[in-house]
Image (cartoon, rainbow, N blue to C red; front, top):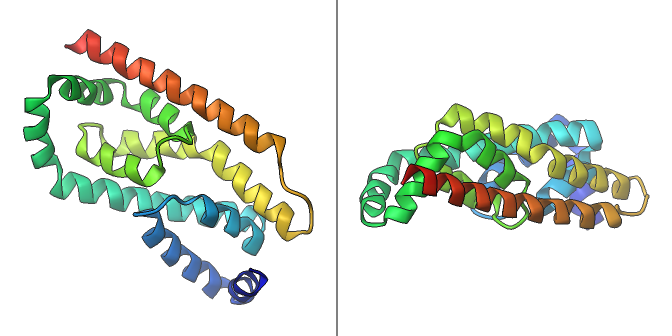
Length: 187
């Protein structure tokens, strides 16, 4: 594993560009966790966090806009036939920032799937973007820092990873409860 890491790190700025391209494509279809930690190993904490944030933002925007452009029309028809889903869509439109923030903290729903789901919903792009930036920060920082520690020869984060996963599960439950509550209020 050291060969690919040293290879991309040795490329300097070109390595950052290569990582960015790989991350955006990968991040549109697969969970990004391994690539986030890889950034810490290859680029260190500061550069790793910056390149992950930039790459994740572009991947989120691409997934959101693809779903909005090509899927929202079909989603409207499906929502018309499923009142419970339409109520959830309404809840996202009304309370999107809070719900997206909580769901971004969750390890249960992969970010690439969330990107498409938010694009299919009525939530605004700006709301999605801002809530995503805040929501992905803790887990992203932890993974990049863990990668940076491993890259520097230190041991991993162990207990922090489990604490973050537990907090993410709590955030998932809270987000689910808020969606159900908001859907009941709006229906």
